[in-house]
Length: 401
Image 1 (cartoon, one colour):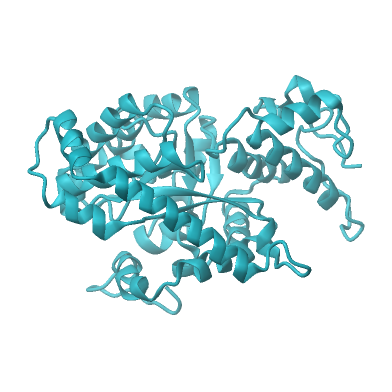
Image 2 (cartoon, rainbow, N blue to C red; image 1 turned 30 degrees about the vertical axis):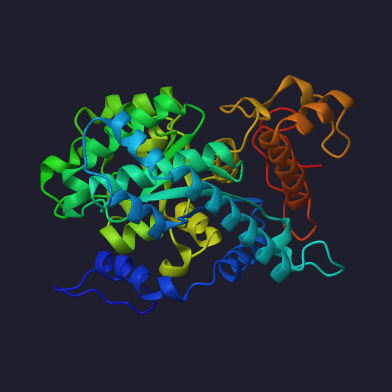
């Protein structure tokens, strides 16, 4: 998107989505992931869930041999007979190779490892929502099976333009496919790009239900974008549903401005905050949009007058609503009250009970690491005055030591 100027015949939406087919074949996966990890480390990110696809041609090939049917059980049996489990095994080998390449490039475990070695990486398997029903089904079954088999894959997501004619026509079908597979493999988590739409991009009737369907039928634990929420039927009811069910919304301000032309007072970010919907900040293809997490946070602060406490809540939410396994460090995410095993522990010397809790719960372990890093950051002598930390160790608003 660098230097791009939209005109009447070619929009930011067009520019953004056309890029992937241009560089897709030139990507070296190990080099790419190593670069992403290094860039994340420079921003002090500890954890990332990267959306990717594996074995796409093999999945496309077996999908082409299946005659589409709304009988999802029969469809799954056909894919099994065609050897989808072997493709899943191949994908595990792909991930092994990717990990080895990333480790080699970053020199992890050597004397001078690069910063990216410190970043925990997990993956979300993606389904292309513009494909045929048979291929969408096969990709999604593959993603669920891989997530069930390999802990490095923590969930699934759907990608590609939500306004594409096939994506619009088959949206409800896609949600039913997810609903079916969740009934078979309930431990697999779903994040969905939904509501990446706005008035004028699609006919108004397509703005009325995508987010609700993603949550109620598709079982999404996180929603990406959610820009058209106020165009949905009964939007305030939907906002309360998101809050009550603790469904996080991934806010991508630069992406929404460039692709949809939605920013500032036109963006639903303030509505989500007003209804206490959990929010996280995301970049959405930062390489294409030429942004990063720091810029996204700065944009949120300058556009919506966020306080330091607001920013810390957004950052904590990034781990809290991740798909990492295990229990949370937090008993209460409204006041950021620590779970009882670690509530009285100094962050530099966790008690034996807290240590055992952290060792048994990967999510809590990373959240604890973040809290330690946050205290160190806030106590840096280069700050003109130390900000107040919302919650965490001690009472809400306690000064960093």
